[in-house]
Amino acid sequence: MTLRISEGLLEEIRRQGESAYPAECCGVLAGRVQGNGDKEVVRLAPAVNRRTDDPHRYLIAPDDLRRLETDLRADGLDIVGYYHSHPDHPAVPSGFDTEHAWPWYSYLIVRVEDGRGREAASWTLDDERPVMRSESLEVLSEV
Amino acid sequence: MSVTVSIPTPLRSFTGGREAVELTGSTVGEVIDGLLATHGGLKRHLVQEDGRLRNFVNLYLNDTDIRHLDSTDTPVREGDVLTIVPSIAGGRPAVETKEELPRLSHAEVLRYSRHLLLPEVGVEGQRKLKAARVLTIGAGGLGSPLSLYLAAAGVGTIGIVDFDVVDLTNLQRQIVHGTSTLGRSKLESAKARLTDLNPNLNVESHESRLTAENALDIIRQYDIVVDGTDNFPTRYLVNDACVLLDKPNVYGSIFRFEGQASVFYAKEGPCYRCLYSEPPPPGLVPSCAEGGVLGVLPGIIGSIQALETIKLIIGAGDSLIGRLVLFDALKLRFRELKLRKDPSCPICGNHPTIHELIDYEAFCGIGAAPAYQGPEVVAEQLKEERDEKGEDLVLIDVREPHEWEIAHIDGARLIPLGQLPDRIGELDGHAEIVTYCHKGVRSMKALEILRGAGFGKVRSLAGGVDAWASRVEPGMARY
Image (tube, rainbow over all chains, first blue to last red; front, side, top):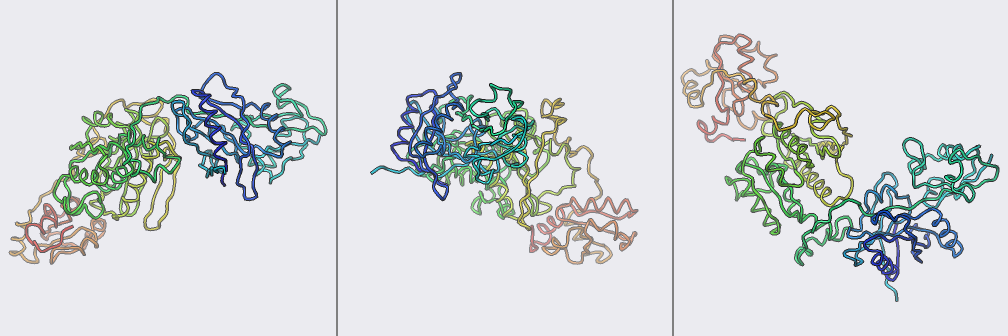
């Protein structure tokens, strides 16, 4: 499976990560699922990080998620995954990420080093085991 | 009551793609139990081991979170809709000291480019490798491939403990050495090869045997220890020192066609003593020098050790902590055993009795009960006596048939040590007998058996057929 996202949207996630630094940003990847299972991100829906006690955690509350989902459905879009930033940490899922991951969704992580957005990588939960597998990420340059 | 359970997209693969499932029950809890009973794959994602809902799984009855109602006891009515809503949580590791990792030069970026392309390694992982300090115990069969791969992978500092010199019999498997370094110290030889492979590498040489006296001081300086030793006292010593110092111990062992590998890390799983609380009796498990080893085997096991070491450093994948991998080269088969921490382990259990390093030679029974010492004859003397007495002096070769084929003394008779007790009747109790083996250890055991059976005139060839080949019959093959 591949996650496709435009360079512009990825840049937007980096920018959100930079403005949230040293805390984490988080949000929803809204898009469409193709016949072969590949996902295409069409729009970002920034979410409110409900965890205010710890800058290295994020939480998207179920109420927020339901509301977002209803809005997206109206536009014919689905939640295909989530993004969040890792301040001063590689774009690799933490144990906490893995523990809280849902199957099927794409988890896009962007590293923010010293306040500057860096590399991104996408991950999905393994079907069998509680581990995250890196997923192919295709960044589409806009014409 | 018939209730509709609305399934979120990520869980639909467990309901055959269906967005909603119709179920009956009188409370939310009953409906959920029914859902899990018909769609077992959902269990892992929705409930904990004790059967309660995981804390990031939310259930809405129509439009209300059941936490605001009576939780799973909330009654349901005909036509209600129960919706599963995820909470999405995560974040970078909370406690991690952000140390300054060394930067990579342009040349290093190019050298490690195939690593940098892997998100699991990346620049960050490569910098972690550069910062890492790994100690390998032994520069032999396992130490060769693992130090080569660690050096190539960009581990910044590799410490090596060894005190041996490169011997011709090593080169069948110890690929870090070469014909050009025969006779030189293994440390010197390995350092030359490893720094040729990767000049960025810093090799720290510890030219000594690892002992209870120096082990803590040496191991303390490193992040990870990789055990490539071939004997039990050192293996227990390395294990105990690593447990006492909280260091992961990447373990490997080989014999003939079989190998094992694991990661012993008492902080997170079992240690070597949890697996083998007692060493085998001395002499029961032969060393590779006695039993032989297929040269490729350490290449496979040593590479697994290098792999596990790199995974520990970059924090990727599932480590071998709590798992023992068994490899059979002839069947080409890997098996895996789950290892559990032993609560009564004397060093990492709940009530440890070992708080410092002990005498490992004594613990493994070496030197504790002195081996049988019978009369010996040196090679030159045996030659003279044979010339004089001819066939009246009976020469018994107690090695294995395949060793006999490599080389044997003319006129000797082959009775492998294991068969000796049953074939003792073939021998004349009054004859003058000399036993020999490869180097003089097994023939002494044969002597003990013969003496015990009442044989009076028996001696063992000191230094075995090896001494004979070097001093009496120089044309003979040695192994």
